[in-house]
Image 1 (cartoon, helix red, strand yellow):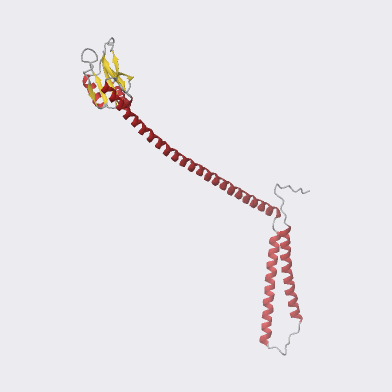
Image 2: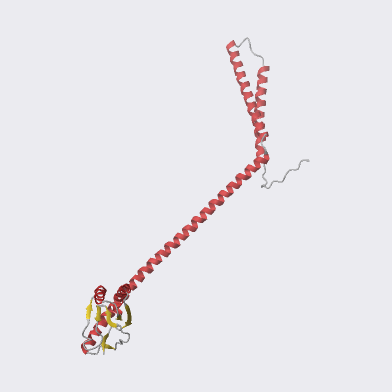
Length: 276
């Protein structure tokens, strides 16, 4: 007993295909039958021997032979097509059509996925462009704000310098009185760091300590002087004013490379150092 296996494919109707094959076969058979009837009618009709010449009879024979040859060719074509249609495996045809359909579905899915990815990329690019434009606007606004703050700071520094100058002229400038402790046996050196450079006091005790100061415009000049004086057994204390912060950073790096002990204390911009 033959059991037909159930195939896991989508049902596919071949009614239209069989209808086309049947119609074509019927048309070809109708043509063949028509030609055969015409041949028989021509063969059964009497040939007018007396009234027709030999050339006319030969021409008619050639025409009949050509028609017969054409009829045989048509019959062969019909037989070949009928044989090829009969040899077609319907199961194989259904599987081929199913694979073709699945390939088309996969291709459509791939096109849809690609379109979706392109849309996502376009959205991301648009967002990135918007963020970049916003950052450029924010950067421009921040730069403008920084410039305004710099101008304001410069104005405040100028005003503070003017007030300091007035205080000095009136003799009421702030003075920081220092008493240096030499109990550790090291020689102290005091330097005041401001925007104008460094004022160094090599002698911090005894008479004339406040007057014996040296002026250095750059950290390089001060470091060369310290090298000439020698760093052994010495300790440098820097009183740092706000305006000399940048110069102090350079000096601190140089002192670290020289291996000299150092320390610093903040000092108001309007204060001065005096030793007792």
